[in-house]
Every structure is written in C-alpha cells, then in structure tokens.
Image 1 (tube, rainbow, N blue to C red):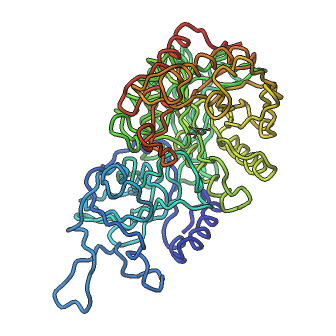
Image 2 (cartoon, rainbow, N blue to C red):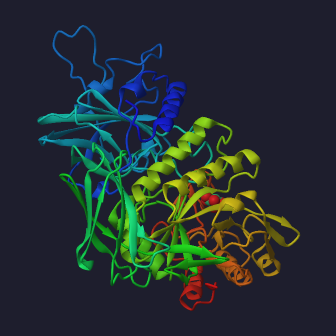
Image 3 (cartoon, helix red, strand yellow):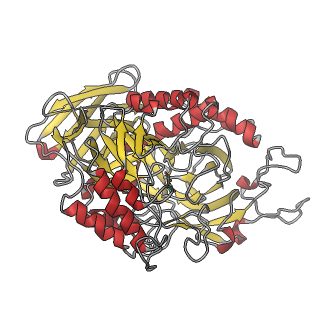
Length: 613
Ligand code: GCB
C-alpha cells in the first residue's frame, strides 16, 4: 500500500520504476518506506557487519531471460535440494562478504568502477515483542534499493543519501530470519543526482542498518525549536501514527523543569508550545544540548537537542538575534584516511575536528544530505551546518518525475534531520543552469522546504557571470532564497589568482551572501613557485588573493571554500597528480595539511576575513 504520508511522490516513483526497470507490480505490493525523526534514538538490533554479496550486472537475480520479473528470484535465498528439477545458480552461503556499512568500491578492487546491481544477504535472529511494529532502518543505500525479509517484499527506495524505514512487522518471525537486498548504483538521466557529478558514485549499503522496534502507536516525526517570535518559548509538533484524535503527547526537558502537554488532531499531529526559563541557547561558543523526552501512549523517545534561532535582517545573518559571520569550509562525505563513503562517528569527528582546528564555526555539507552521525557531531561540537539536497548541475528539470524524486528526497532529509540545532540552512541546489524551467523547479522545491520547516533559512549555490572584471550575481533564483550562495573559481578555472585583486562584485540582491565555493587543486607535498599549477604554493596563492577580494564584498556573511579534504572523483584522471582525486582539499585524503590550510586558519583565527554586519 502506498503510504498516506507521501502519496503523490510514491505514485510517481512507482511509475519511474516501471519505466526504468520494468518491475511493474513491485511498488504496489511493497510498503512505501517512511522518514522518521530520531530513528537512531530507538532501541535497535544492529544489522551492521558482514553481508554475503553477489554481483549481478544483468540483474538476472530479479529478471528472466525475457526480462520479466521472476517469482523465484534470488530474494528467496534458495538452497539446492536433492531431486531438484533444475539448477539453483546462486548460493548466498557460499558467496563472499562485504562489510556493511560500506561502499563496495573501496572494499574490492574489482568493484572500484562498478555501477550496477549487487545483491546483499544476511541472517539474523529476532524475538518479536507484543503490541509493537518492526522497521528496517537503513541509513542510506546508493542509489536504488529493493528489500525482502524471509522472501517477502518489504520495500523499495530511491535516493542514495537519505535514511528510510520499511515496515517489516508482518515479515519477521521468532527465531531465524534473513534479509535480501538488491542495491543498484546505475547513474540515470532521470535520477537525482543525474548522470554527471564530480564525486565517486559509491554503491552499496553505505550507512548503518538496523531493525527498530516501536509500539503500535508511535511518534514517527517531531519538530521542536525555539520560537523566533516569542522569547523563551519552544514550539513545534509531534506526529503519531496509529493514533486517533485526542491522543495525549508530552514533552519534557528535565534540566529546565519544563513539561508540555498536547493532544493530537484528526491527522495525528499535536501542536507543541511551552515556555521555558533559564534556557541556555545553542551556539558555536556554547553548544549546549538538553536531554528531551517525548512520550505518547506507550512510546517514548530520548533526544539530545540544542535550541537557537536563526534569521536574516537585511544583509545580516542573526544567530540568537546577533549578527554572525559564517567561517566555513565545504566537506564531502569522504572517509578520512581509508577513502570511500564516510559513515562513522570517528569519520565525523575527524572531519569536523579538522574544521574546528581550522577556526570554522560553519560547514557546508556538500552535495547531498550527510549521515545523521555527522549532524549529531556538529550539534555536540558547535558547528553550524548547511545541509544540501542532491539537485546538482543539470537535472532533467522539465520532468515531473524528477521533481517528485527531488521533492521526496527533500522530505526525507528534513523529516530525518529537522531537530539538529546545528543545521541553519537548507540548500536547494548547486550550480544549476539558469533557465525558467530550472527556476520554476527550484522555486517549488524551496516552497516545499518552507512548508516542511519554516524555522530555517533557504539557500542554494548559484553560478555567477562576468562582465570584464565584474562578477554579476543576478540569477533569478536569488528571489526565492533567504541567503545567496555563489561559487567562483578565479585563479583556477578562470584567469589567475591575482585577478581576484581587481575583481568587483555587482550583487543584485539585498540579502546575505555566502561564497560557497572557491579554490584550486594542489597535490600534498608538491612544491614550486606561486604560479606552478598543482603545487601547494599555487593553491595557497589562490587563498591569499581570495581573502583580499572577499573582504571587499560588503554583504559577505559567510564562506565555505572548496574544500576540507581531497575526495575521489572519476572526472580527475590526471596521472601522477590527481589519480582520480579532486585535489582541492586543504588536507589530503591521508590527513596531510597543505599550505593553504594554514593561510585560511590564520585568517579565521585572527578574524582577518569577513564581518558579521
Ligand atoms: C564546483 C562544484 C563541485 C566541484 C568543484 C570542482 O563548482 O560545485 O562539486 O567538485 O566545482 O572542483 O570543480
């Protein structure tokens, strides 16, 4: 049954599936996966670990030789029996293993460039509890995945960077169980992102996976934030599934001796509004988190949450009512030292620890929603976050199905991450082509983001154009943004680092501006003169001249240079220098700090770049 939460999105996704893979009956039969807030706070049986895998480039585990969906596909996890009338040509018990979480590309040399379907299987034992529901919680599987439990369809999911939850209550039983999944990272024109990106298309179950148990009536989503208009008031809502109107919901912050009582309406949603006194607001200088408990019926969730406000006033960004300058850096979800997709607390703490050491109070988590472990680390460490939708470069903006995919991923991103105080900006897109179809698409997406969460600011990284030495920011998308992001590569893709000294900015919006990217490649340890491309000196020279230029932009309220750490990209084949890495990191993938790191660090620590007002 399609879920009532995302009815339109799911129908559109079902159609898209039918076209691309011919799995006609699939989406109707399986449950639509749901986004939950705080799924990682639920009691869980971890399914991390070794999973058997079978590489299946022709997807013959699911399709017959005439490309019809098989009834006896590999999801049955069949074992050959004496007397069988035909062969069983797969056996998960004899298959090799992959670590989950983990992309497959960095675990097997033969899978390094692989794009296509791979089957996963693992056994688990389970004891169902009375009056409860069981969900398979998947942190992320890139890009398209199909899930079966004990041979029964569980769900299908599209989108490689958002968490989802499949209801498997009817499929699990007491004792021995098994899960089979097919994960397909094939790039397609009508996917989000689309065919072209500048990062590695890491495939697989890339984030943590577990079974979570909830009572029959439970809180699937909740939103709590400090009111932007009423001093000392926390407001928001909680949504209960399986509840009728009038169900009581309670929110408690023991440290503040604060308790709120609310009741659900006919849609299962309870509006929350209560006063607190003595609240210490979350900020980078004081990342105070409170234990918060939500109760409803037999359900309860224990959260760790910070409270702060974020707004704009003219060209200023106000955090807790005070102007702030966002000293940032961009970050890909690339794992430090081992490469591959980042997922662990240690990955998050290493990346954000470097950002802190650099003097940052802000990070741009590009170019897709990062793992919730990253947002939780940012909450703890006091780092403001720009969280981004994978609307990257030239999607098929004229396709309603593509819009539905982008909008669905945005719903999952906000639905999952909405309570992290660290997130101050939802970014709608990166470097999209300036035309009316694109503008209409992203305008609708921004309206959707505001409808889902009006307590944060909306941004996007725009392209700029130039007349002589003047950079002009006039993309009409700027009209729908609260904060304008712009990317520019003076000294790398255009002109020379020194050209920044004579560059003027003509910004047609009276809004705060973030230079969301600038930079250049340098191979760690490669030295030369300031004008020798690929050397640390060249990159450092770009940063020196950029900092001078940025200080001449009166409405500049933040920056997130491209980027903290080198990352793998198949677009970067230059042998001996790039070797399939984008080398614009201030730190190499092996943790070596380049010269430009120290230049930016000095500017941030001495307050020599940017001003809050
Ligand atoms: C950009 C993109 C980013 C690329 C970067 C580069 O403008 O937004 O994804 O990786 O340039 O290095 O070219």
